[in-house]
Image (cartoon, rainbow, N blue to C red; front, side, top):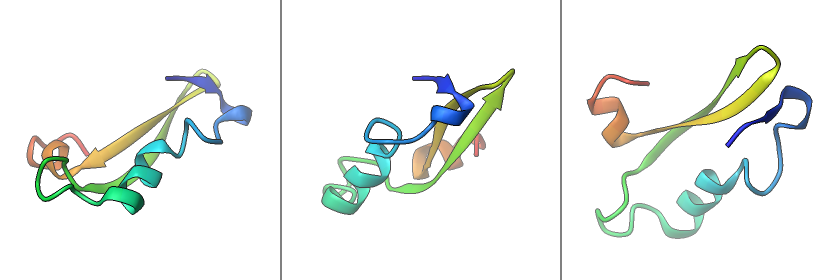
Length: 60
């Protein structure tokens, strides 16, 4: 998902964080969300969720 930087917000943008608050890690069936960062390239933004699995792989 991507959007112009000035419109990078809203329901779709906050979905990973909302799901973490609502469901947690579902007893290990869903990796824990550690952070969400926005990546911006040439005025286009996209959310970059950092989960426990991604961190173990050294990608956040």
